Length: 231
Image (cartoon, rainbow, N blue to C red; front, side):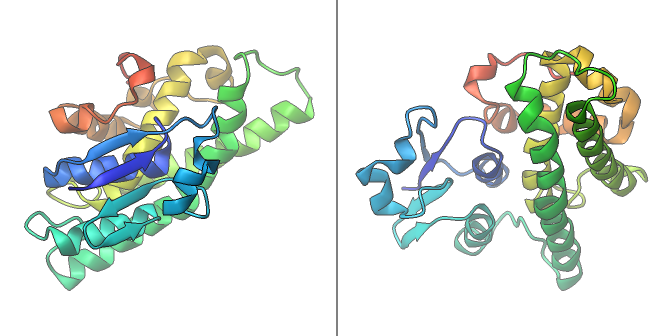
């Protein structure tokens, strides 16, 4: 039995949900509450003293990092690889995976943290708040363009012909960006995000392709009420 502890909608935990979905694996998913500070309870700290998610409990021990979990899943359940079947595939998938971990995640953190925290009102022209948001939006656009370039030649998934670790890391980030477009349309439009199908058509098609997989759809945060994606 695999037991995954995470927050609903947390991108790092969502990566693991995607990896499980791609591999067709079942797990006991335990969503803990960020607002209730469940990560700081003695019970949770007993399995992760760092009080972070995700945490995967396995018969062999506990893993406390999303990428290490994906790598472990590939070794423990190798029939459907997340990191490719050849050295060349592994090189490319690991490269995209880690660039998304480093750059796409950071761009989204800078942009979406204030966007989701606010009421969607556009800051005053010339304000530091708007300048900061525009700087963060530029980073996010750069990373979307990076993914668009990978997918533009008809490639089905970031990991190749089948979805893998690169898709597991990037999908939550782009879905979070779509969520911002859905829920804060005026503000995101001001930051030059309108509809992904217009801004980044190949990324949008990739998201649509993954959204058609029932196991992937099941990873969408329950508190989103399964609202339509802003494609």
